[in-house]
Image (cartoon, rainbow, N blue to C red; front, side, top):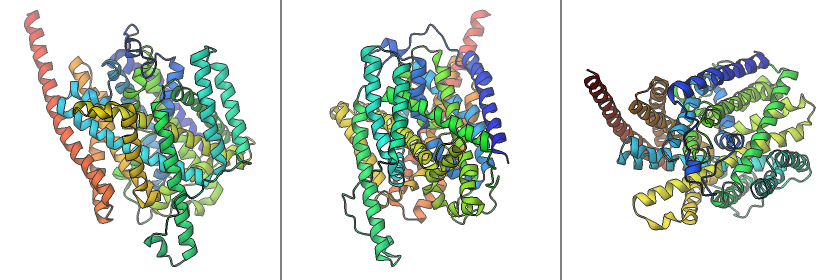
Length: 589
């Protein structure tokens, strides 16, 4: 299969979806009003509610929802073959993910920029609000824990990426002050910041940094079982370094999440969006120039023994990149508070999801063409020889694949690998920034619900958020088993998306509008996630994974309860709609 053909098919489908389907949604379903006064203006406070240029907001929203998930998910899912992964990314993004993102951003904007969890109160009922907030809390717990482990592993594997990643934070703060405190505009600071970042990437190959092992872990029983004492000691040291990075990342996340959005979140996301566009351009050019053959199988008939069935696991392994509940949290948690005009929701919401779908397609190309050519077909099968190795090695497959493609445009492979690692780390860190901030909101909302005054303090709420996430990240084999969280994260993520679509559906029903555009993807997701969650719980029970079993079991109970509440709310909305129709008929008779 030609990688150029696959790229053109994907991009053409996304462009068609944005030009036609998103316009249909904007005009006929959500009916955007250019004169509607958005919460960013109504509640402007300079910290969270900030009317924002739609291009800057697109940068924040896109990079926050993209993160590393549309890279990691497809890079794991190609173990089943590139065809099912590609089809779910393209079809899922156009008809499910972008509809969800657009819808949650619009509904939140219409309800004072309330989070999707709080919206459950007014749309589904009081109990549903608490249930939804708890599910969201668990989702953010998994999101932040997963990405902390992903970033830590990438820092360890690519020490040349450390200097440019941390240096970019200083640059972003400088850009924030220039834009919001001196009024110099956004173009020149953004271009200068991007150039500075690339200089740091070039310097990174000469300035690698490795974090010392501060913990001095002793080898575990599993590590000693190999019989090689030296290898066991090395593995324990690796665990210590990983744990150190996880703690450093959550300390950073603590401060990043309490700063005003204009100081770090917005400028960093805006710069990262440019960085991603450049990365996509390099990948596209590499594909067009070298046209590497997609030599990985379209459908892998030689699956490893530990690989689960692609049905339903494909639809939760590729979470972000097709549809993601986390996007609804960003849309209703931060983006709706910054939306300048309601009509910007199409560009930010639907367009942001399309952008993430494009990232997911590049991940498929990088792993099944670039990386596959780099290691050969036998090497590719060896890399994907077990489900565990496919999960743990997803980011390395992408990074090395991008390195191969970047060579096609004349970039040295060593620099290209650092560049790719910086891209993945930057977006994973952006997701953490937003995720911790959102978790602080959720903790505060729960505290308000139960009259716990202490957690209304943003510093205390943020500390609870980062401490709980760090405990989960390090609670599975001292972080070494962190990627075991991926299946549970994906399942919870898709469950949240399905429940968010349910809220959008009921709101549309109350307005008397067409609901099939949200009902179909909602029903599909709730069915698949329930099936996948049952499979996860059975596997955790068999493998004696107590932490995952406890978290997954709690989420499953909350899911069933919330679906019960939603069905009741759905029936009430149908009854109200029928009564309104009868009243209107009597009035006109």
